Length: 106
Image 1 (tube, rainbow, N blue to C red):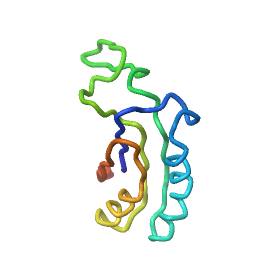
Image 2 (image 1 turned 90 degrees about the horizontal axis):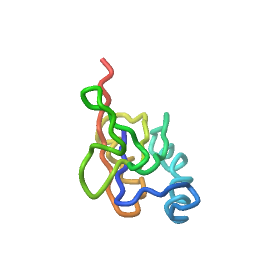
Image 3 (image 1 turned 90 degrees about the vertical axis):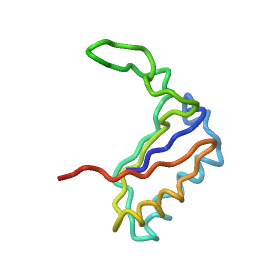
């Protein structure tokens, strides 16, 4: 799984950077050229729109602290972790970073 963190998460696709959107539209082809494949992925709304549940208590917003928040994710098919990291390096971010984390499947 490739997690995308950004300092500011846009409210909508129209509010996102056109350069970043165009780069994301090219991703499936670029990733396929490496022998990988996007299985799923979505952008997320800002953390302020979240509802967190801890100890069965609801809280508005995200409980994750920090200047950056989760902005989206991709689930990719890759030959190994190095390949997934290579794919992760292709993903554009405006002001943040990418985290590549293997899924626990077994």
